[in-house]
Length: 171
Image (cartoon, rainbow, N blue to C red; front, side, top):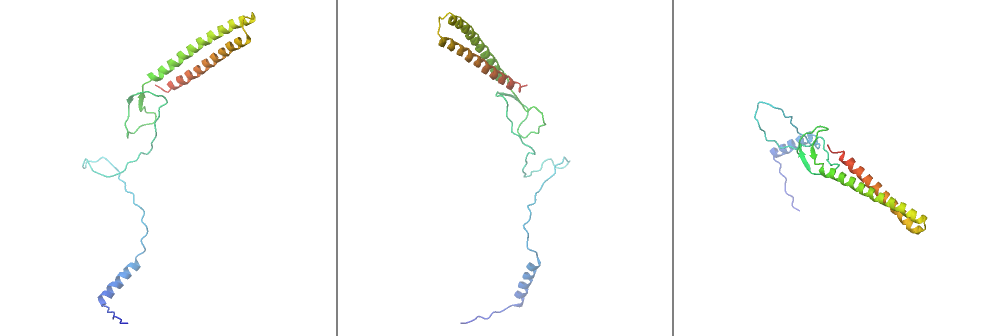
């Protein structure tokens, strides 16, 4: 096997030793923490515009929802505006909610009229039953109609109270 002679040049040996010594003296680089940059903006007499790349995030955010449905008739703020607690943001047209209450009240009145008719019919049926002109089953059917009419009135009254409570959220 033929071996090649290795020739060292003094300048190359010195350069290699200097490089190895320089790397040996430096500590191993630690993973640097990402630096966050920020800027304070102040009014000054300097130039009026500066172009900067940045990300702006809201300090607090919230999602809005309405207690009642309706058309928005006034919008006091836009996306990105700063608002104070209690500040009106928009106004909703209350007509549809108020019409819903009026409709519920009318339904209660109609149900009460039906109940009055059912009660009078029950009184007549009781008189006929006492004179043995109708059966017990006919009297029971009429009493059941009165019970159903009473339940209908109670249900519609509850619905009306719920509609009235919703309109209480409107200005």
